Amino acid sequence: MKSKALILLTASCLISLSSCSQTDGIIKENEGSQEQTETVKTKPHRYGGWYCPDNLNGFPAVDIANWNKVPVVNGRMPTKEDTKNGSSLILVDAEKYPNAKPLDITMPKLARFYNEFTERFELIIVIQAFNIDNDNIVGFRYLNGGNGSARLNEVTFLNENEIAQIPNSRFVSYDIKINATQDEISKILTNPDYAKALQPTFDKNKKLNADWRKTSNVNYRYPKSGKSTAAYADILFGAFYVQNDYDRLGYNEKFLLLEDKEANTTTLKIVCGPFIDDYDAQKSIITNWAKKVKELSEKG
Image (cartoon, rainbow, N blue to C red):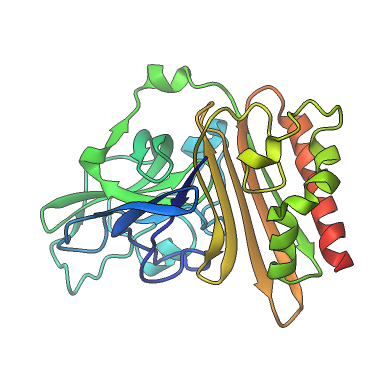
């Protein structure tokens, strides 16, 4: 299985809504060894190439039926408040870039974008488009949660016929508060020793191969996920984050731990999907799995 390291700079994507991190390289890993590093050329501004898939608080997952209902700002540059309430993403410094202006594009727009981290094309919702230093930039939401940005020529807007052909699907989004530290919970999530205890919650009939855990970085498995394209499990700006991407229907798993050290609790945020014909079943499975993670974590 491939493992993709997320190289993120500047402010953390986990908490901030108005600031996000830029990618300035990609480190590919295979079985724990570093293969290569690709350096992106210096950009005249810092607004292109943001990648914040873990910003699940600021930009939660969106079911395909609701893509055109997300809040946006049209016809003007966004204010600071717009970037805080989720209707926009990028706040441009007007003093530094006085000539920055919105593009004549009515949003939201559904588009396709090739993600170098997940190594697949992603459906995205473009919520911002502007020109800065003669460069056209778009800010967008991933359907599975989080946000990013790119140059306009890197995204392809879908027409009505293409949108109509997208299967109706939904994401399971679930939060659970656990009375344990993120270190204790991440151990339950990733240590193969706990796979046996968690497997009955999502594989009651034992249909998975006996060695299923060897091809996963987390003690959870959706049998219809398809082939893995990228995987990540590590501390990201102080929070433990897991993201697994697959080739079947753009299936994705996200597990984020947000620890409150004062309250001695940690919130486990889960986003999995999209699911087409088994949403209700998977919602029940994921909920039960999360409750078992909570039980095991609180046992200490």
